[in-house]
Length: 268
Image 1 (spheres, rainbow, N blue to C red):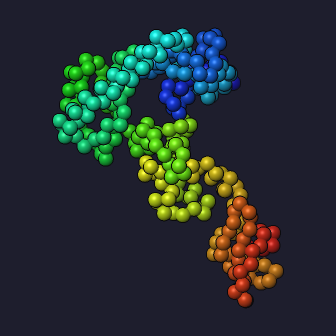
Image 2: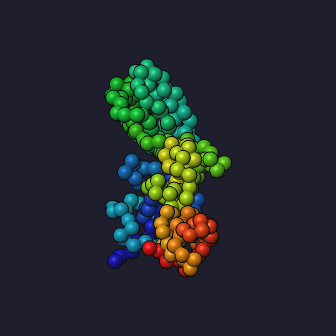
Image 3: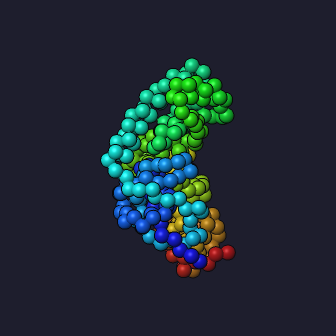
């Protein structure tokens, strides 16, 4: 299997990292670069230094780094951010004018100013054709309205989680991973939605962090409510401490609750 020399580039803070052909440039983490993308020429920063990766890890064809970024490019990005603020205000006025049931989340100019992207959330489908026409008439450029989910909205807007720290998705998670209620159950967490949901209203991403460890640690342990055999007779499992690998059981003969290790009991 062949290998390719690549460099990892990120376009937003905590955004996904994409691989590009460095074209022989000596690039380090934090360097500004101008790259070719499906959206056209874009400005980004090196997140992963030049390295070799297997061909199977790449999405072909591999786009190229056009050149190193400079101060003029950084100034252009800042100017686009300022224009995006005005574009947001204009779009919100147009949304109110057309009485559309949608919430504008963010506005982004592409680096070459060839397109403005408006990100929004909505409960269902929205007919925004007239809105696009209005916006195109104002900005005289290509307009794209992109509907996003509530997790993407939280990532864009940021905030504080129930732990008191900035949201993981907005600070270091470059992509969303599936999270299930089963992960909360395996970790013996409260299944109260208010306690295991993030600010986006979906299950917290951090439920996944220790899920694999809990899954492995649970092997060989009985389920709560199961009947087991002990040196003191049959007993019912009333609690399982996965991390300490201790099982509390209630003896059938005496009703006494004792704590045992997995080696001290035999499952029925």
